[in-house]
Amino acid sequence: MTLPTSFNAFRIHNDDRGYRSGIESISLDDLNPGEVVIKTAYSSVNFKDALAGTGEGKILRRFPLVGGIDVAGHVVASTDPAFHEGDEVLVTGCGLSETRDGGYGEYARLEAKWVIPLPKGLSLRESMILGTAGFTAALALYRMRDNRQTPDLGPLAVTGATGGVGTLAVNIFSRAGYEVHAISGKPEHADFLKSLGATEVLGRDALATRRPMESARFGGGLDNVGGAMLASLLAQTAPYGNVASAGLAATAELDITVMPFIIRGVSLVGVASAGTARAIRDDIWQLLADDWKPARLEAICTRETTLEGLPDVFRNMLSGGSFGRTLVTF
Image (cartoon, rainbow, N blue to C red):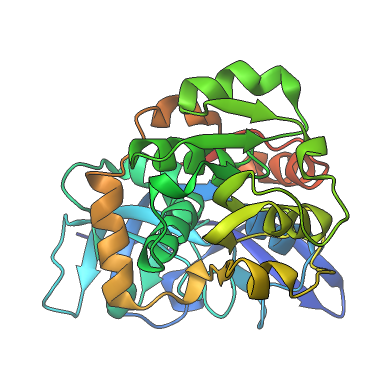
């Protein structure tokens, strides 16, 4: 295939003209080195993308970079024998839109060691409805199960349940056989969350306690919010349950005591999706294509956008308007 001399990409700068982002015409020579070049079919929007695209968070470690921590498409050139023209592939995290150019371009150049062949059972579109959000939700359950989390311990709470990670977690956890209690400050979406598999939808006041210990209400859970809600979830978790921390939608601060840990043996499990080892990454994507594949992916994809619409999506997400997943189409 003839490679393009130029193409459009959503690029982020931080220089003497200030922090700015937008669509530019660039060439492959402008991208970081990599063994695999793909023509992008889809990307997605994650909270981290909104922080990077607006400068509200210190995500990028070098400038300029093409934004987008997720990408999926077809291989158009490869110097690695594991990949051939026409192969369907994806990458999430792995330094995209942090230390190297990401997925918000019509073409992407990628390091072969992080390129995942599209698993059987997923389309390119489905892989990006999942994206980092779905990978994070699945990784949280993967880590909790490694630490002996079972359905018998009780329901799993999911905070920030209407966001990308939250909606996918509700669907994935229920698909894996767990009872799920969705925690959300958006009661208008209660029926939607139940359609994804939540047996109960609770308001934020369910995690409003300030006491270091409460009656055990949950077997564990996934927190996307941080701060007081995470502290309250830990205080209400059953003996030897696990709480996975995957986000900071409210705050990065956490004011807790050691009581849940030393009295109930509760575990606080970190979920760092971007740097996950390749072997675990492969396992997660196989699960997402098979046993843990969300049953309502298209319903969870609540918005589609092109590169031109990214600034509006970023603003809406950072103002608390996130609902489901936003797919970026090319």
